[in-house]
Length: 128
Image (cartoon, rainbow, N blue to C red; front, top):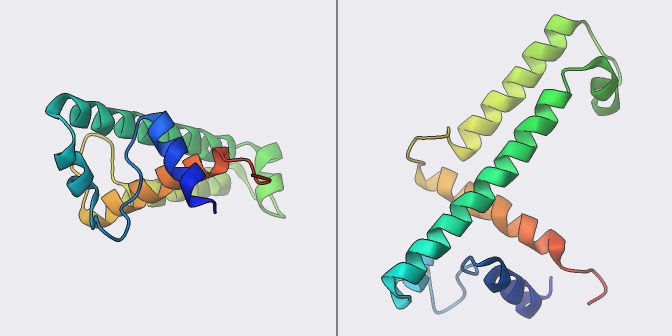
């Protein structure tokens, strides 16, 4: 991964880049910003995270149909099996990233940062 391009893409999205050698946590970056800028950066991060989660859950909800489930797994199974399987994937997603409207644990916050940063890294062209 091209780190300078990644950092620029993070700043362009309005969120803080991941910590490097000097800074050990995102809170170190936030303390360097003014209160208004820090608040805006937090809000943009949460907004991006919610968008990613919504897309992910919508993709999992689509798996409940026979056609889309066949693309995911070889056999389709009956409807009750597909729905139970998809509900378990959604529940796993909620466990890993935290339920909406709840305070996330440290692991969940780390997982949230990971999916946001991976989403940003997908925006960078490969040939740059």
